[in-house]
Image 1 (cartoon, rainbow, N blue to C red):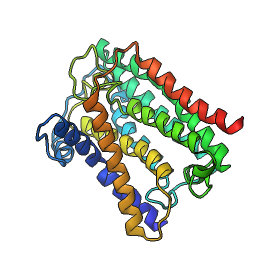
Image 2: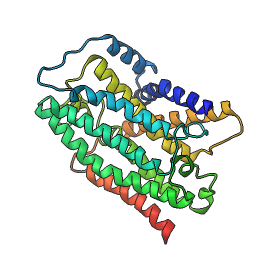
Image 3: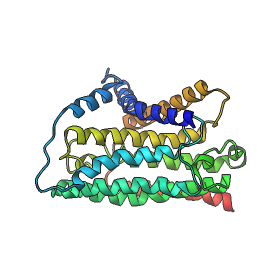
Length: 302
């Protein structure tokens, strides 16, 4: 259990590095030097030192959004087996808590956006909630397929597909789940092709437009929450692909970190090779993710 908490601490500290890897990958693909790998840490330190102004028209909901955007991925990380070791918190049915703790955070972030009274932020909140309703079925269908493969409703055993021999029995279903969840990762973290975290055009933004009025430490919490959420969803993919145990803690941790960095590089390559989709095309891709996960379930019950 001590090792599990050490792994959790490593995830909390190293999460911003994934954003740095993505930005560095995009820069190299474009032939630029780009920002340093540790730039997200510098940004967070700068934001935490700043002050911020809160409108008199806002309520406590305005600050609840940034807080929940950090708390939700931390709780989700507690439920995941990190680095080949058991989760810090595990119980039957914890996969439902995993899905809906993010839904709770999304609710408060969207409510905080609407609390400002800004029409732009309300527009972004509307898009965020609409797309999230299409993302959750893909995530749940994937978990349903893994439950069928492993016979468990707990994430710790559900994601240990190697121990259940699932790769030998149903490799096609697992590949479909991985493809579906990679799309989910891009959507949940507002990455290209769903959103562009580098854009500043309010009419086309989704996540960024919701946090236009946050500044200083509040905006720092949001950025850190984004990094944690990316790490959590990357962990889902890495845990399925890599075996849970190798026999040594340093090797397990090194392999887990390498898997997370590989996912970050893949995200950077995707963002470098394609543009964001038109908003009317986004639901089509999200439905495709749901169909992929649904086909994984069909292959297991046929």
